[in-house]
Amino acid sequence: MSAISTRPKRPRFDVNGWLFVGPALALIAIFMVFPILHSLWMSFQSGLGMRLSFAGLKNIYRLFNDPLFFMALTNTFIFFLVQVPVMLTLALITAALLNNPDIKFRGVLRTAIFLPCVTSLVAYTVLFKSMFVANGLVNTVLINLGIVNVGIPWMTDPFWCRVMIIIAITWRWTGYNMIFYLAAMQNIDRSVYEAARIDGVPTWARFVSLTVPMLKPVILFTTVTSTIGTLQLFDEVSTITGGGSAGGAAGPGNSALTLSLYIYNLTFKFAPNLGYAATVSYVIVVLVAVLSFLQFYAARERKA
Image (tube, rainbow, N blue to C red; front, top):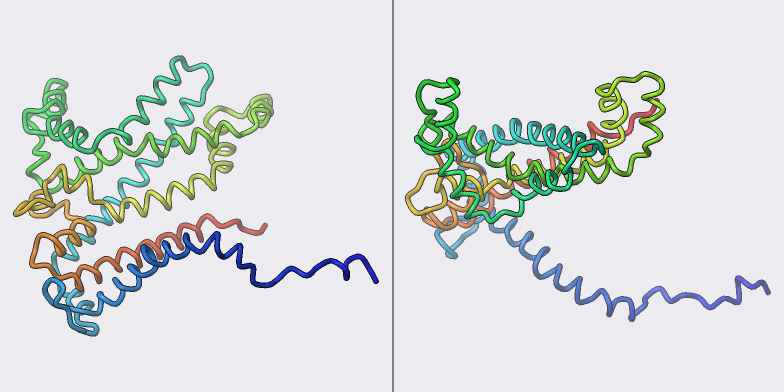
């Protein structure tokens, strides 16, 4: 008889293993799986508060005839299409600059750029509101430099209100994404750059042809997480424009209203319709799934 055949067979059901993972699985089922399935069921219901009744596809029909929903969807896509590429490009360039060993005070600069993402949301909101009011620091600097003749109406013009929100989000999250790029750059073998430098490859070409391709997995990760974060944008819009407060619109004419803020308003601000709010929530789920699939597909490894 061989040594393999005499080895004791491992039981298919190991009770000790299930005892270890059982509590975690129970918590996941209670706090993640059940809410997801319950919200899916609620998306087919309608009514005020908790007095819900099955409505079939009524919420989806309302979705296609809701101008406020389309406004929130349009604003969310504007923030996504403009802010995410700008922020990730700035983060990549900043990481490349601060990865240069010849730059002095690199540690201080890295900390200063990363600090906004750990700053209190209240302090951050007060700072931005004070900077972007009609006679604030931003307008004062622009007028003194001769860039504009009169102050820009950041808070009262729909276009400039969106620009202000994009600036605020970019300022807060660029440092967060920069840390991922910086960590990845420090793991690249320096001999690769030395070989390219000896071959006469200029600095910008080394960055485009060597650094960016080797950071592809990290760039994909930050793109997907930033996409999800932008589609769920709530905090900045709610606090800076006051869109989540009672009676307050998200910017002039709801020009900064996002899908997440609209869901909040449907649940807590307007006459509470939890069923319709759940339907709008699943729009974000579908958008995240579709955009993430497209980003993974675009970044896939292609066979030569």
